[in-house]
Length: 258
Image 1 (tube, rainbow, N blue to C red):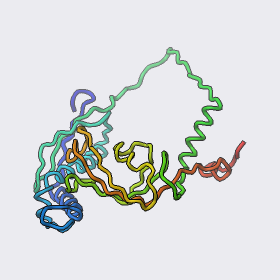
Image 2: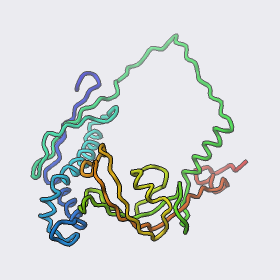
Image 3: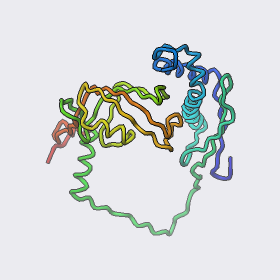
Image 4: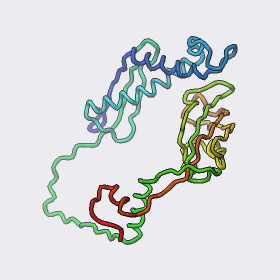
């Protein structure tokens, strides 16, 4: 323990577990790798390993640190206040992945004597606007999607397949199938999302996307990527009517719309 609320946890992930994940990731990457002298996806795994081994190892380590730290915290019954600071100690093929995580926990507060202390009970008035806002939130929780044949617009959901490359080479996380994207939610880079506005079902699109310098994926940070995209489906959001069926969907057996 570091002081009264500081904690430090040392974790080691077995080498065989690290190797298993690295090999799995390399095999997946090899299916789409474009390397000189080989057809796409036909390069030997050893060649792919020589080209991307370091990046893959870092990506695997990041995932294993996240999952193993979660398990360690649960096992030790620790709840961090904010995100832990992680310091890798050992990272290499054929070695255990070792790291140290430092973080603060909530302080233990003993029994307080509040005799004689005056406590003011807050009172909140609920008006019609509060009720309307809550009902609208509940409707969005039961929102469905209706496929249609028109250009995609703001708040529509599009289902896409995509493959991205940088200078003709794939990168970790460069492909996806049946990826659901809601236009306007800004869950992806703005250039990527803007290039899909107005798309239609079955349309094929090529986009050039500039990754920002501070992008979290260092393999593509500050680089220009080309994405080949196929639009599988365009759907509009449908909010449920406020009726008996809607009310019962929240486990309310009695009551109705007023």
